[in-house]
Each structure stands twice: as structure tokens, then as C-alpha cells.
Amino acid sequence: MNPTPKIQKCRCGEPVLVGWNADMCAISVTLDVYPLTAAGEVCALRQGLSTYRIKNGRLKLRDQYTIPGHPPSHQNIVVRTHQCTLFVESAHRLSKLPSKPKVYESAVLPF
Image (spheres, rainbow, N blue to C red):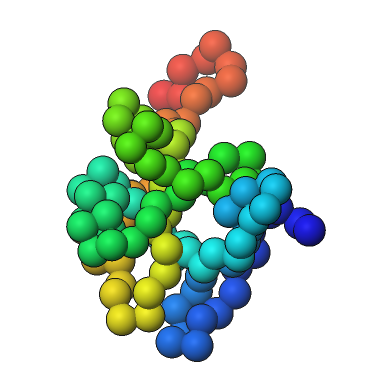
């Protein structure tokens, strides 16, 4: 059993992550590929969808003990279970990291 989730295409046409939800006694879960913001996680939970943290290529179910104090971020990637009729709104998707500013290697100023 390979614990690393794989990207596949759902029958609805959306890309999804398919993986195991634990190391032992696991079940296969299908997740949306879009990382969530904190508001997106709240919306998913209100819709009855579970959320998972992706860390080191493994999925970890988030619950009442792991959600408080650990909001979704670029260091704490959180995704929700996939449901074909519910799409992740763009406002609930975690934005991409801004590009790092260019650092000049030499001590000579570029002008």
C-alpha cells in the first residue's frame, strides 16, 4: 500500500487526490486538489465534508483536537473531501506564494 496520494480525474471532470487516510486500517479517500483557507475549511465543515492535512506526502484527518491553533497556511496544507456537486470557490482557495525578490550575488550594485 502506497501512502502517497495520487492525482487523478474524477468522473465529474475535476482533478482529485486519491489516497489512504491512515497508515494502518486505512480507507481510500478522494480529496479536492485545492488547498483551503481558514474560511474554506469552515465552509467545508459546515457542508459536512471532512478536511485533511497533507504533510510529508501523507494524509491526516483533522478533528476537534487538531484544528484549533493550526489554521490552514502554506506550511499547513489542508484539503477537503471531494463531492462532485460542490466545487471549491476561488475565495476559499489558498493563494499561491508570492515570488521571492531577486537577490544579487555580487557586492557591486546593479546600476
